[in-house]
Image (cartoon, rainbow over all chains, first blue to last red; front, side, top):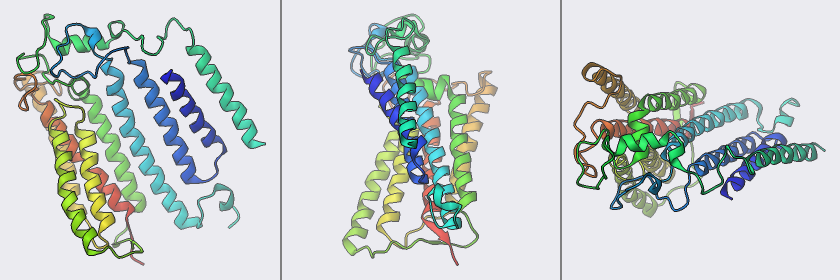
Length: 111
Length: 248
């Protein structure tokens, strides 16, 4: 079921990207979309009753004791790249605000 | 009208995704995933042992890569070249922020309030605790959940706390750039050492030790500490760029 929740988050982010005209809101929508995709990838690796893929006091006698570690490792990469794009987008937004005095895409052409 | 069209489009796209996943034999239902069907099985197998013995925390020795955390084994050992590219992405984004926002003479942005005595002293006391937690996470990345990326972000968040709680605080940006360059170069140097000793770039050439101890897993803890330093200094640089402005 969590898969569908992740897809709904993705849809919310996509809707925000399509309708919003304010740059900060666009960046927030992009982040919601990314989080939806990340949760979706993690749910792919989930196994009913599986624990986190860490050898602690629990002895993993069979492979099914752990959830799939590979999607988690890939999502770790995706999160970092999301942070990088968000930082760059916010820096661009600050430059745009200094130039135009507004962050709304509709108001920029009027000045 | 535009909102309505966007709504219809989003519903159509989301419905197509959900319908294509629903009752699809190629795609497992949530909770029914079998890791043995995937490549991760071979990752777990390789990380556990080469001859399918049980791995006992604190007792098993000389495993192939050695860390207790399999995600760390994948990120910092089997796919370490990937991680090198990942920190390059972060470096390029911090470089882009510096190019966009940097100027010659930069001054601290005003906070519009004066921090009182309690806030300044309290934030300094908390700063050390948060910094220590970040360093702990980076050092113990091969044993517990966490690692270089969250640890580095915690280090940066402790400096953000000082930025927000003290209206005159500024980091020495040039020293952070030095630390960042040093960490990145040390990562590549370890990779080249692996190439020299083991024959592959980023080969794990140190002894892996007993699983579950701090001094285990070969080069993985070293790489994760370097990643923690690099990520922490990069994100601190980004924060500094955002909270300063060119002097007019």
